[in-house]
Image (cartoon, rainbow, N blue to C red):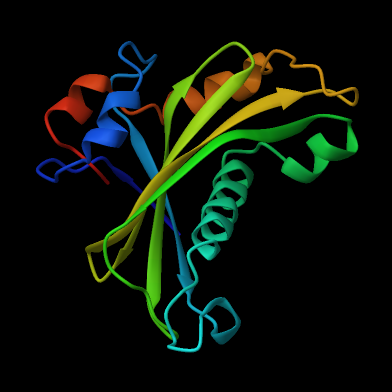
Length: 172
């Protein structure tokens, strides 16, 4: 896993660019990356990754990212709080196959009082395979939305990708 500054010069799809927060709380989006190797169980009979597996990859990257930032997803769950997915999107550009080494980049697209939207880019040898997002809402035991803790907001804020960066075509 690695953390790097957001590079310049890559295209971002109009779908993702339209949803980027226009006024994020950080000047420099930081991207976190998780590396995974495609397992046979994640592929179809042709050895191509089954489309729903990308959401599993997003979740693995999100868990790794939160843990790296000192936000304990298991501890949150045990305390009665959960980040529930309210909306998801994945756009596919090229097939990933059994044995491929994939880099899943994650950043914060935007934050609300009770929600956070994570952006993802899946690459194989620097070639974009898929991109998407997960819009999560923090809820308590009863399922009622609750405010993101200040400490978590501060940790996530440095990973917000600027709307201006997105409109200029920047992607991790």
